[in-house]
Image (cartoon, rainbow, N blue to C red; front, side, top):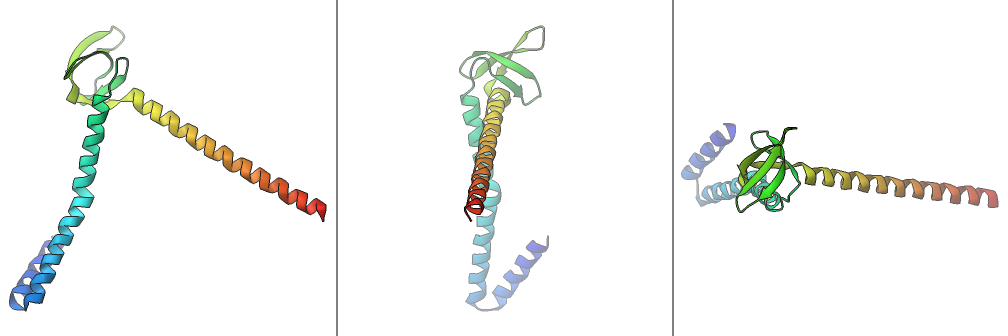
Length: 143
């Protein structure tokens, strides 16, 4: 609310003052719109694009979670429909593609890749430290 009142006060001051006040008001408005775009609209569009790509890349055998919280494995893929198996009794359900919230199979693969990359980086760091330690010991022995 304080931001709005500040803008209104500046607007009133701009009307009473010269053209410089109205220019600063316009700059303030464009800056506010720019901040809103980069803080709200752009990340939302990015998330929507990622969700669409995830839904388009579904494959038979993927384990998914629907928006309603139903967990199942994809059995059949059609244009806009999926048939999934849920539970131990293998109940089949037909759902719309847009109702898929998470692809657990892909998420688990990404998590494993991330952990492997971290482990490789840690191992590389440890090798570098041991190499530096060995070089330091060699230089002290040479003296």
